[in-house]
Image (tube, rainbow, N blue to C red; front, side, top):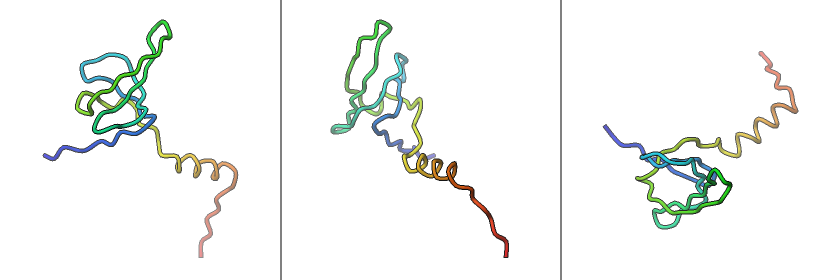
Length: 82
């Protein structure tokens, strides 16, 4: 079986495989990800983690998908049969 490579990007929500708070990825630097999260008191925390330490909780859809969704809500798509 082949391991799948998960690309993490800014805005992805991750968590340590061992548990802990849900964090947002800010950016990647040399195989390390800078993550940010807030604790129960509202204090902001930042720390770097390796990709091997993290699991993806939520990966937002690509921006182009939001654009397409916005266009389809403004215009009616009509199918023409020939």
